[in-house]
Every structure is written in C-alpha cells, then in structure tokens.
Image 1 (cartoon, helix red, strand yellow):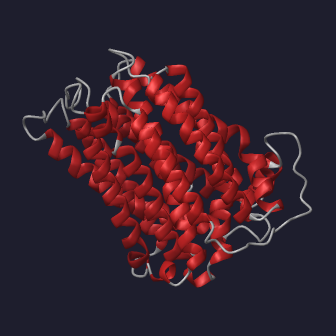
Image 2 (cartoon, rainbow, N blue to C red):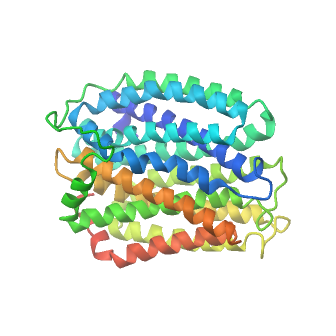
Image 3 (cartoon, rainbow, N blue to C red):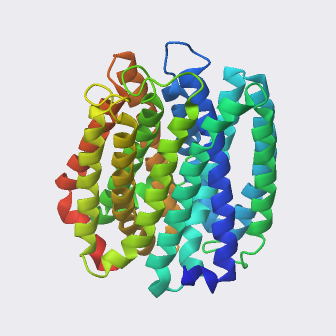
Length: 415
C-alpha cells in the first residue's frame, strides 16, 4: 500500500477505477439476479446478460487500444468517467422500468464504456510508477479491482430483497458514485501520448488483428494473454454459478433470500483482496511461475468441491458454510494466479505497444467472458447443475496452463 500512499496520481487512478468497476458490477449483478430469479420464472437467463455486457469489448477493444496510444491515457480515463455519469442515469431509469430489453441496452452501453476505459487503465500504470514498484502497484490495483467487482456484485442481493420495486434508488446511487469517480480521476497527473502519429481508423477493431500478429511473434507473451483470458472465462462462469447455486439443485434459497448469494460473493471478494495483498509477499519466497500454477490447481480443487453443495451437503447440513469456505479458497488462489500474470503482461511488451497489448488483452478477455455466458446458458439449458459447470470451467483453465507450462514459466523473468 505504500506505493499508493506516496503517489497522488496513483491514488486518483485507483479511486477512479475502483468506483467505475463497482458501478459496472452493481448494475450487471442486479440484471443477473433479475434474469435468474425474477423476470423468467423457472429459467436462468444470466448467460444472455453476460454475453451482452462482454460484446462491446469484442467489438471495440481494437480502436480503444489505438486511441489509448494516440492520445493521453489520462484524457481517455477522464472522458470515460464523465460518460459513466450519463450511463448510470440511464441505468436508474432502466431498473425502475424493469424492462428486459432496456436493461440489456444499458448493460451494452456499460460494456462500451469499460471497453474504452480498459486499455488506458492498464497501460497507464507503467507510466505512473517506477519499474521496481510494478508488482506492489499491481497488487493494489488487482485488490481494488476485484474488491469493487465483487462488492458491486454482492450488494444487489440485499437491494433486491429490501427495495422491491424501488430499484431506481440503487441507480441514483450509481450516478453519485460516477460523479465521485470523475473527481478522483482529476488527481491523475498529465500523461503524454505515447504514439500521437498513430491513425485511428473507422473500423471498430482498429489495429487489433495487426497487433495480435505482432504479439504472436513472441509466443510467450501471446500464450500468457490466452491464459489470462481463460482466467476471466472461469471467473465469468463462476460468478453465474454462484448466483445459480441458490436454485433447487444447490442451496434452494427462497425468493427473498438473495442476500445469501451476495454473502457468498462478498466472501469471495474479501479472499481475493487478501490474496492480492499476499501474492507479492509470497512471490519473494516462491518462484512466481509456481505460485501461479499452484493457484490454478487450488482453484480447480475448490470449484470441483462446490459440486458437493446441495446433492451431498444440503443447506440444513451446512451447505452454505461449505460453499463459503470453498469460495474463500478460490479467491485466495485466484489472486495468487492473476497478480503475477497481470504484472508480466504490463512489463513484457515494448514501449509504445503496452496500450495496444492491453487492447488485445481486453478483446481476448471479453471474448472469453462472452463465451462464459454462452457456456453457462447452453449447459443450464441442458440441465447441468451450476456447480458442475463451474468445475468444468476450472478444469479447462488448468488444462490450458499445463499445455503451455513452458510459456507460463516465463512469468518469473519479468516479475
């Protein structure tokens, strides 16, 4: 945390990205709960909402990456924070109307906002801190990002239980948070454009595919990008599975017990925050590549054990406690996996290519998050229980890590 306390610019950056991630996930999880538990009785339509939120990242990450190199990343960040205010206002209206198509439209706009914010956000970190401070800075950024993501996902349960038909109140809170985040972004010091001559063409994909071809020349970097994307695929499936765990095949929660789903997400959030703080400390004693691999294995073990909740250990027998303990392990392990991976991806690309690299990273991450929505929707429609779906996603991720273990071993070269 000391790297943040002595860097005013990083303080503004962390505050802006925390509040933005919180808003995105608060609205998204409200839509997921509505899709799973209120709007479509007997059906779980979370996969549709997940895919709609991810689609703008697939469509616009390329041009967003070009823009983050052509102009100051600070300018992009501040512009997106202003846009967030208007989108949050539309979100308040959509929540009150409880119209499925309107909700999906606002969710899409939130995805567009985040797609342009992402490359500037991640590309700006190396411009604000010294190389020796990269790992602790990334630990703080990972901690606050996951905290915002999962606390934003945890709050909707109590809101849905207690606000009833007055969900516009939560939307109004989002507007206020967006305003505070915009003020926080003003603390970021001016950052020069890295490639002001770069052309930003009419194609939404920009130079995305050209950058992907460049990155493939270094198979290590490209493979770590793929591994990172599978982490987000797994995370997307897990978030939906936690919400789905409240159904008849899991904990069998009543319609007014959404807060228990939020409790599970909050436990996951706290464990990820703890893991993000511990990862740089552990990395001083354990080889970074082994830390990441061990985190991946532990995630698979804990997510596989979630299949016991419901069929083997009912809620009356302590199923909720078991689920909470397993999600705490998933959070700790996930942080130990992703902090080294994210630091490598910020350090390894050459100057002038970091923003574009994170555009590719955004594109791949959200392509896989989109696929997480498709994966979850397809398997739930086939009658597969949510916990089994999550275990399958973790197994796929570990398989990819094992297949490219010689590339994953490069994590320790930079971090």
